[in-house]
Length: 127
Image (cartoon, rainbow, N blue to C red):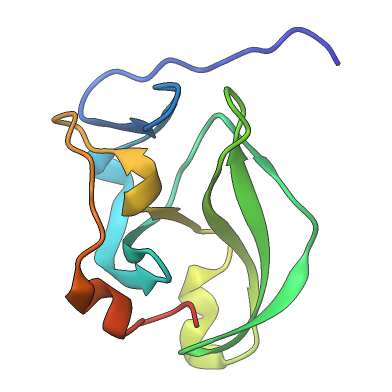
């Protein structure tokens, strides 16, 4: 491996709950209405300090998508996924965008999201 270069952000930051590596700014949130298997998830247009896994086809509540999981460069934790391609025309706006699972990141105020019973019942996007 080489030397790890980590980008430091300023402002209202979403960061890794394990190692505090910065991921994105609150200003880069496109939508807070996504859900995943651990509860709420936010759609971001820009995310830093992540590596990507292998492409895979994943059936979600809104149809088939090509996605890559994203991992924190600091500790290696999986923190969400990136949409590489959407098969449905109405979902094309997600391409190139990132999902950060709230359960896996700390919010700008340092808050940690916990899973509630209601969050486990349904999912807007991930099965």
